[in-house]
Image (tube, rainbow, N blue to C red; front, side, top):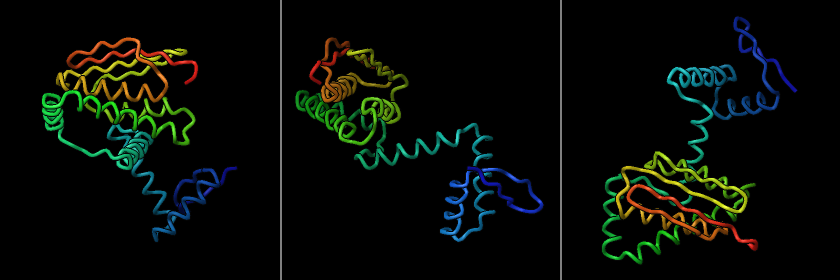
Length: 199
């Protein structure tokens, strides 16, 4: 159903879905604003975003992901400091560091499996691509029972590359994949896995 609203007798008429107009009217009341003010504020934001070369829907989607990251325990950290801490941990206690990152990847994947999303792996892939800002290339491709993960970043240190690969291995295991091959070197991770029948 559509509803036609006039925001002003001297302004143009626009058409919108009735449920959206009702929801927007409720929002306006909650904020102590008129519907006219609220509608024009939204229009101004849309125009401003467009003029800045931004997509309003993408901004909202990324804000949702930021909130998801906050709720799941992510924090912002200086990239160089993060790499330095990873290097120290890797050099001092390599086995424990790899184990910790593997377990973190497993825990992260379980968050998706136990959630209400229709496709946990797809949701994991989408969020991982967003969260991993420091990797200009990150692809997760699933074909039948096989999966391949590729990560490339010239900024990764040797230590961080291996730790992040361990994180991905932990996640893949929880999703039911057994690693069949791995090619890991500074700034480059290539993992291949196969899903078992029982998974």
